[in-house]
Image (cartoon, rainbow, N blue to C red; front, side):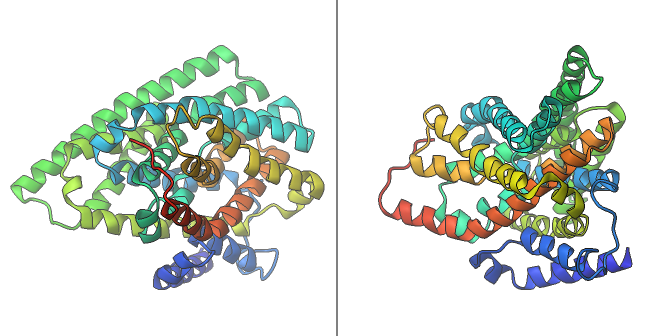
Amino acid sequence: MDTLLTVAGALALVVAALSAPIQRLALSGPLLALLTGIVFGPAVLGVLDLPTVVEGHKELHEASRILLAISVMAVALRYPVRAVRSRIRPLAVLLGVAMLGMALVTTAVSAAALGVGLGAAALLGAALAPTDPILASSVVTGGPAEKGVAARTRQLLSLESGANDGLGLPLVLAAVAIAGPLTGGEALLESLWQVLGAVVFGTAAGWSGGKALRAADERRTIESGPLFIYTILLALFVLGASGLLRLDGILAVFVCGLAFNSTSSAAERSDENKIDEAVNRLMVLPLFAVLGAMIPWREWGELGWGRALLLVLGVLLLRRLPVLLALKRPLSLTWRDAVFLGWFGPIGVSALFYLTMEAHRLGADPRVLAAGTLVIAASTVVHGVTTAPGLALYRRKAADGSPETAG
């Protein structure tokens, strides 16, 4: 543990000190963390002696669960409530149609590329469908993104990535029903309880937390600086209570953040929110370093490198981009924004969370965990490398005079 803290801490310090050059280069913090974990892991230097994902999926599940909760809370606090309300229609299309389409495409690609049965393919399709809010943050926050990318496009990607991490649970439960002993009726009832309960509980907790913060601000019983700590503690409380109630904790935290943002004084603390975003970008680094050290190299090889390459290319190219292009008109997107949203839908912590959840419920399937982590690693590399040139290309196309969509 001390070695892991040393490596992760040193990496975070380097990324924090060089954040501006890293944003300009074809790199990202999670990509650097993943490479650091590989170098210091058992496959190279052996400094970090960790089990593979197949053996250590329970610990990874808890780590990804906590990190994802903090991240979706940050997404919910990112935009004022009026901005969220104005995006309800396209957001519903992204969550109701696009995510299902991405799950079905990924299931088909997994079955064709790996030659696995419907159960394993469905588990991969459901786990890899959600857009990761942590990896997506690099294309919706920060100077290059905020100056170059249309506000509506950034808001849609951000809100989608926050909401679909929780709403991906019904898809995962459906896949568990296909692959395991859970019946379709049981999966439906559990989905309804978890999702609806999460909405109700998250709304109540966020409303109460927001009112409490506003009252504390008005009575001057709280210092001006601890908003980040306050929201983290609120997220952890909701996540833990949701676990006790067997609710969809990630969705509950996201809904809590929206309700909190509508009732609290958080919107009045814009400077603090910017600090919160910076800290959130650094918190993900230890998890990606651990993932790099826990890569199941042997299981990757057993997939067959030809099949593995076909899987990666199929998922990265077909999972999202064709779906978003097909939904260009319902989403009221220009071609520029449809391509941008279609490409930048990275696969990361949310996929790791659902893959390890499936392993916990059904037992670890080395093929599913190997294929899933391979796609996560590939997405981290490819989307990390293409972020800077993708933002630059978007700005150039915008400068050419292409019309922007109406909100």
